[in-house]
Image (cartoon, rainbow, N blue to C red; front, side, top):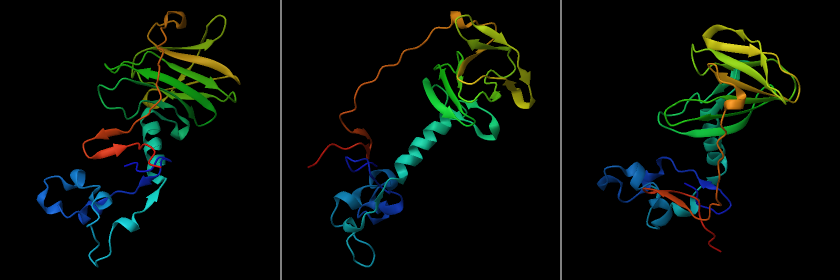
Amino acid sequence: MQQFPQRLFYNIDHWYNLSRYMDSLKTPDIMAQRDYIYDRRAHYPDGLPANPFIQCGLEPLSIYSATVNEMLLQSNEEKIRVFPAIPDGWATAFKLRARRAFMVASERKADGSIPGIWIESLKGIECKVQNPWSCSKISVWEIGKKPLKLKYKTGKNHMIAFKTEENHQYNILPGGCHPKNQSQTTYSSRQNNEAKHFYEATIGKGKDF
């Protein structure tokens, strides 16, 4: 996958067909995906060596990033959807920008439960959200020194809508939850100093100069 320290990718697709070992492997699309990079004997059918003509580009990195973002948050059709395409068993959280000038943050537990949705309105536009708790009752709160419970409208397919003010923050909570009783998860990170490997695929690369 990623072959350069400046984050450029090789556009690897069907080029494993150039592998000299393709016919002898059960899963050549995985095991021989990079032979044309490391095996200097790999050639095109007309005899030209494959290695000097490898194409690199930035497109794969942007595609991966966009895919992950769309799994966590979608805001098409003027409607915010949280975790629309997350596999079962994934525990994850995000803070991302949505269309119509909203910042959105939420968390999903490994059991699929969602404690709440945090929204900051940057332009004071009406906020529309797909209710991730399906038919369960929810509450919408404006966050301030004293949380203020707001009225909201309901629409088709469990959509809710409520008015916002510019640069104000809001919580959408399931059931009878109150903002003061919500616990906040703190995530930590560490600098990534080495490549990650998954079978024959690699993401990241150390400096080689």
